[in-house]
Amino acid sequence: MTRILVIEDEDPMRANIADMLEIDGMEVISAKNGRQGVQSARDHLPDLIICDIMMPELDGYGVLAELRQSTATATIPLIFLTARADRLDVRQGMDLGADDYLTKPFTHAELLKAVSTRLAKQAAVAQKIQARLDELRGSIVLALPHEMRTPLTSIIGFSEVLVEDCASLPPQEIQEMAQMISDAAKRLHGLILSFLLYAELEIAVRDPAYAWALLGDGMCQARPIIGDAAKRWAQQAHREADLQVELQDGVIGMTEPYTQRIADEMISNAFKFSKPGTPVNVTGSVTDQVYTLRIQDHGRGMTAQQIAGVGAYLQFERKRYEQQGQGLGLIITKRLVELKGGKLHVESTYGQQTTVCITLPLVP
Image 1 (cartoon, rainbow, N blue to C red):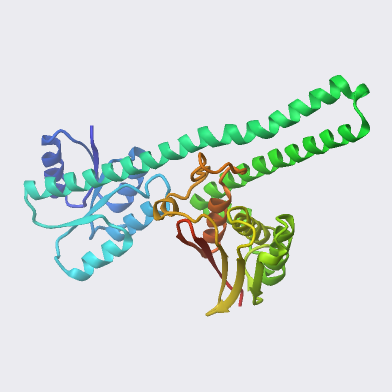
Image 2: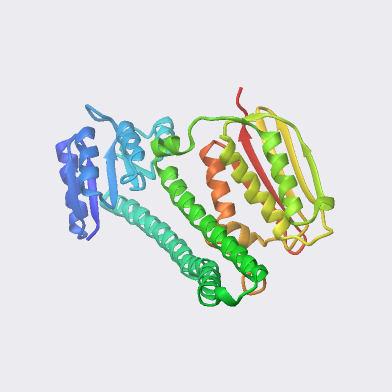
């Protein structure tokens, strides 16, 4: 049964609205002022709230502001009731996040139309979110076990050979197997750390206090960190000649470890997904108190649909390209940047090139 919270200080109006909604089979919870309404919303988590604007103790704007501050009530749709058709009142409510408004007096049909329209939109949003969650869940189910199983298979296989045949193996083969075990263990360790960081960042997105505790308020010089990461990944790919670097310096509001993580994730991807002999451009510029980092490669590129679908564990075209890594790099970078007040934007031409543009505020 649909549950509606009605917050209205006038008793006859509150009772009249409740009667109209109950006739259509809805469960109605009533509150006679804004303060009681906020508490009722927290206690009952209704499907929709109908709230008067002019009320004692806490007006409708205050109710909306408090509800939007709580994760549990932030997404509950709210319809304002106003006795004045003043556009400034309506605009103020919409700016605060109201979903609709009704001007008193209104008819039974007008009330039901507003309620049904808003509930239908909320259901559509919920369905879309559920679809994205199902897609993410499917990506996790497919990608994470595979990525964990591959290094674990190497570790178990080579260690069993060493245990069973150590006495008969030449020292060189023992050393090679030990190195393979070490490489696989490091890969698995990196996977686990990336997963844990991703989980922490998803919590931080919804909890500002946790975000501050996780990321802190540190700062660093951007140029040396990004430059070192670019050289290091070019050397690992044996593509020093492909690297083109042009970096200005600037102090950004990001700690050195997280800045290095961003540079490592994006620059390593540029080399991983482009062929030797094609340029990888890393540029950093300072304009209007913003540091802009651009990483461009001339690799396989991404479609507009793939860019829109960027998310955790989503590896594009895995059937065509065998790639290592669990696909967390881009979403981790995006979360880190956005939590520090920056933006990440991807531009790409499929089959030709990809440019990742990251902007971060400079520290005055």
